[in-house]
Image 1 (cartoon, rainbow, N blue to C red):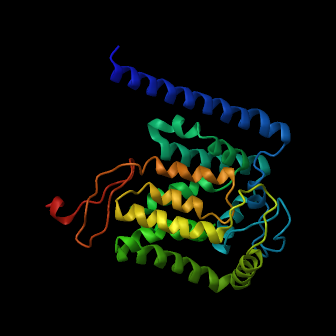
Image 2 (spheres, helix red, strand yellow):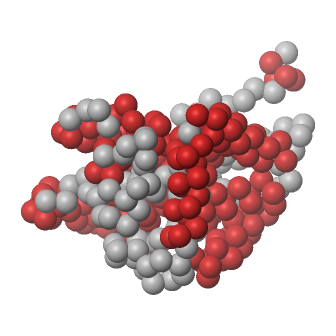
Image 3 (cartoon, rainbow, N blue to C red):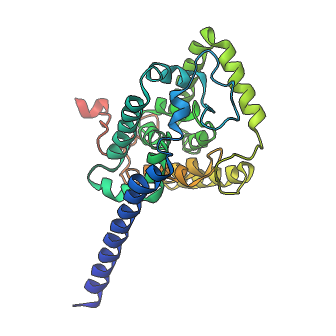
Length: 293
């Protein structure tokens, strides 16, 4: 076997071996470790227990801490009326659906990434955020989910700033502002409670295991990464920057890196306003007026 062929065979073998090992680890986490500890869906418990009347009354109590904005609390309120097993089934289906959409035919590669199994077992929102970032490259309004949940990963919007895609930036911020304005009318006290919670939580060490790198140090690095990527047409840098900018950086949060996979390569299609309309597989591509005639 030629040297080049041997290296290619070895690379494929190692890659497939790592994927297989990752799937074994993920299966162990989901089917053995998590049930044994009784912590399946531990993050989702706070979503299920959300009380729209006062969602931030227990900001420091584990299993009751709801950290997202009032519009997100409003979305969870109907689901909170379900029994816990039904809620977990519906919520986990959404998370798995996001993973399937991100990975498509390569979903097993993403599933082999251990943080994906961790965030699935915990029931956190990271995979939906990864999907929102990917969709947001084509439909900027999807960034509202990022800004109205964990907030700081919204630093990925610097992509539009660096590329001077002002229309896309305006859509992302305008859609978020519209949601804020509409809900502030009938949920004013909830908005005040959320803002107070964000203020009081600044600099507070979380009770869950997190990597000991403060946000103030990570944010400039995240900004530099997305700016570098924007100048080099590397869309995969946006999920990296958004992950690095999470309020607390812990292993399950690294599942947001799954968004890098569908963004890893795609030729650009420039529009008249200079915007980048490259899209991941499965998202309809915009047809320009000239192409339609």
